[in-house]
Image (cartoon, rainbow, N blue to C red; front, side, top):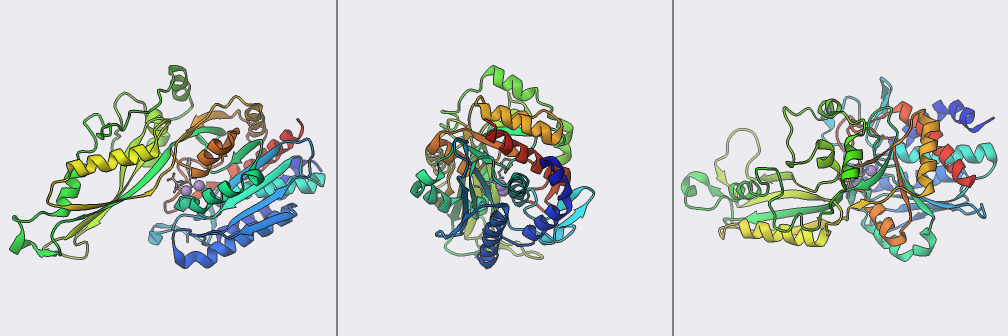
Length: 454
Ligand code: BES
Ligand code: MN
Ligand code: MN
């Protein structure tokens, strides 16, 4: 039986196994899910053994375990490091899910559940592709190292430590990742750029404690008002980030690259369908695709303070809080940006409040040439799986490990995404288009097979 027939014959059993994976609520952000995280790591380790890996380790870390497997039994063949994550985002708000987040359900050609697209479904594609190669040929066509972590959605802190201590062990000719998206349905895509991410939190304190707004209002500072006034000044009328130095090191993207990105089959109509806003905004002088992929941003992610319950409460809050982030592009330096952000906010704040400023995480941007021969092989494999030629795209999301690997080993990083931009990653009703899951297994199996042909 050939590889394609073998994979076709296993559609149902592969999907059934994926559903088992998706039922484990491996939410990395919440300590109550620690046992589920452990269970998911063990589950991944088991499946890698079944796929044919003899060396499989569940490695404990300061936070969540990572799973490492290797098979180095193909002398003279290239060595690939495959990376993915088994942890998922919290499923809340639960009442907005059509079917329960951890009870995966198939509806109109999609599988719904937390982690379907990000990233369990995509990790499973690789496990099943490798298992198929092993079962059809009795061995893997290449040397392969697998690293599946459990902290991606909370910043990959332990992973960084592991990479530093295991540089020799993780060495490979290329990194392969499936944790991104396709440009659109029917358009297989290879991602060659990601934005970096800095995440911040502040606490503003005005009055020493909450106050009656009638008794004191008019003569005391209100930290919530001050917070909103301050953040209102962080964009200018052209929607540029109004922080001195913010754009200083932004690499100029060549006219040729901008032209190529703008010529991709990306549709504003699809974008509008996925977003559903009354109208759109963004930095003047750039197209939507450019605003998403090659320009940095400043975004408020949450503000709170004061009274939010039922009815009215006449109060001047003592404190106001905000969570916010900056997406970064080459060659912005995350640490310099964090300093510039803090400096500007401190400068704008009046003396009437005190601020506690925290940088919760930093992450570098990544963009790299796609000229190595492995990219041609990836493109050919995607064509085998999807019947369409793959395009090269950049994306706005962030994957800390890709930058770390790219910096540490300076090897090609091949990001082959099987998600779609409107599959609600991190949101209610996250789903994965099943045809992409099935075609993905075929494409990845052919990709690894082709790497063994060299
Ligand atoms: N898989 C995503 C990143 C992604 C999504 C890249 C879509 C390209 C396209 C990843 O799981 C993620 O959500 N990353 C976080 C950063 C992390 C440090 C929490 C992000 O981008 O917000
Ligand atoms: Mn992901
Ligand atoms: Mn994610």
